[in-house]
Length: 151
Image (cartoon, rainbow, N blue to C red):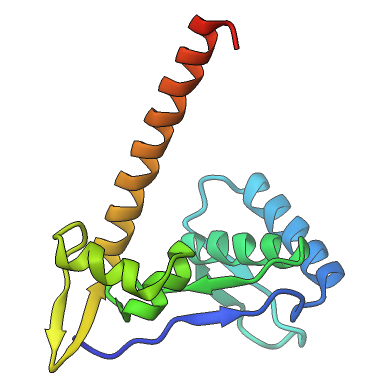
């Protein structure tokens, strides 16, 4: 598997006002042309051919710009990328030893490269979805119990 790095934009590194204007224009365009599979971006000079972008790529760009307009950072990770244990820990907001425990107990599949553990991005996100669902179920059960007890 090719070593693919995540691309990160730090919070505040993009001008929020410029990002906000851009995302509004993109969303307006996408709403005006909902069936168009590509987006044609005219060049600054009239004699240039338009830049043709896939609609999904423009939608992703709009999401990134919307986050930037709110002053948030964004990380884009290719679906076939592999994460280090530290990257996974940072994304889960937990310690690296906790992630290693999740790997060693089989909660998240991984592979070894020498002595280094690597986690497929898809496997990481699948674990996150399962964990989020488990947390939502537990919260719903607590809320139901609280209502039964009149709390």
